[in-house]
Length: 132
Image 1 (spheres, rainbow, N blue to C red):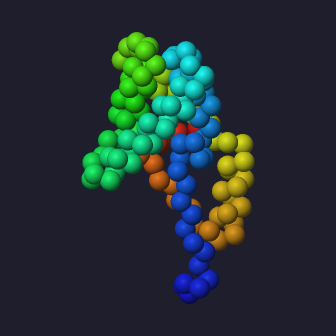
Image 2 (image 1 turned 45 degrees about the vertical axis):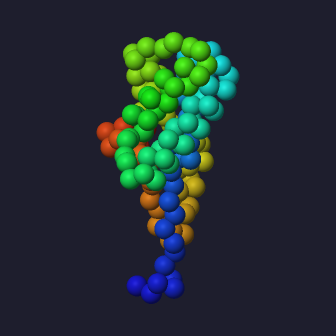
């Protein structure tokens, strides 16, 4: 294959890029009784994921997400239980793709682009997400 005729590989993050996190956003905002709780939590998740990667560590999205939800609750002077954290974060396994994702990915593939995803979600959670 001639590399000049090969389209590039396009990488997509799964959570928030392909999958609509609105149900998780609503659940976190409700749990912490704060309309910006999801934004606070997700920013912390991204930050600590990057720190983990930069220091040659690895904790999957579930572990970081749970720790950051507890930290966000503490920052907002809220008390939440481990069961509430687990129940809330389990929503991520059933997120739906944004309405334009399937058609957009199909068009890219039909036009020769190679597609791949990157995620730090655990494999079992990723499989559930991609089925939905």
